[in-house]
Image (tube, rainbow, N blue to C red):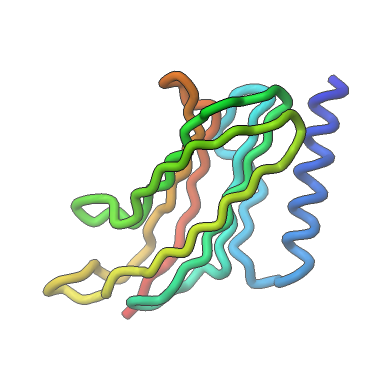
Length: 144
């Protein structure tokens, strides 16, 4: 129980500090899915983007147990295929928040060669030995 309350306290402090520096952040404090002792969350610098605009994505992960050589998968903006598709190897130390920053330029919004305007998901998964330990999905809006 002590480890769980410590994990929740760390997550609350990180979330509070993230929310205080910029109110427009696309912060998602609710954990979509996780195994006990592992948590994952995503924040973007805003919720509305335009064609060829830079998205700043911050992924935070924490575990109560050591986690070596886990695979972190980031996919998003699906339009026939994942426009955003990146994989990272990640090692987590117990109760230490690990952050990954990803910069991604949105595709063009047009019917001929880009994507349609609308809402698009960004999905994150933390995987170890083919088992999904945590996942998280957010949505961003992309306009012309």
